[in-house]
Length: 382
Image (tube, rainbow, N blue to C red):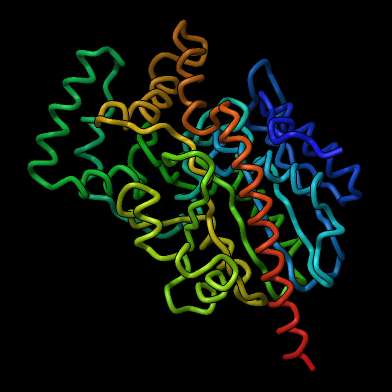
């Protein structure tokens, strides 16, 4: 009997992990688990990144599918992964194609309902060579002081907004947005901190890629995220250079319009900032010696509209307050954690139904694309 969309969603990281592992085990996947010994979840919950391999062990064409890169966003990705296992499963894999699912890349963030890792690191800014000078973000130092008040009171927020308005008058609105979100490597207690060394999640995932995909020649990539305003619609963020083979291949799978910057920016709600240290580029670089790579970060739109700057910044400000000001056991903490979750993983039925429907459709299109890519590889080898 087919399950309802809501049946694939969980109320906690621990429940999501149990659902994923149970489904993968029942489907006959090869499962590996990697514990993060550096941190714990609520109530001392142990934290794991888990993998499930479906299909031929020696497949040269593999779809790498990850969830929970930004921890709190893991609910939608985990549900989509578990739904694929339950609704489609290994029988849906094209001949010669395998699927490697990685569940909860950032288990600390997933367990606590926060975007960053145990070190407040944004994993999608952490995949770069930390022995070299880090990318500069010259305006962040100025905006950091503005956006990091010690209180969430109305007075503190209004003071922040006034200072932010002066920043915009001086540099422009886009400079503000870009400075906040492009990534920075100077303020560990700030926004989109990229870290000063590879995070546990980075090291662990890199090891999985090195071991499990060593034999692959063609790797597709889907990294599930959530957050932008909407109700489960998909936004395709392909970081391959336009015109490159990787970009052209992704456009064949998902449609050129879906990848068009105009489409992406309209669905996202603003211009896209420059990114450094993304997992996408980190994995692409790791695989470059032996495999072609193509794919995207794919967002399930989830948040409700924000009609002013204070509301737009509230969720990231709440995460920072919980980490560095009030603490996870503060009287306000439960309410703040719930606010954050509502942005990334709302409980409304329409969102859950759209996540599952759109997620499964995306899996189908992506695997069809990999089937064609595999046939191309076989012809080239003849």
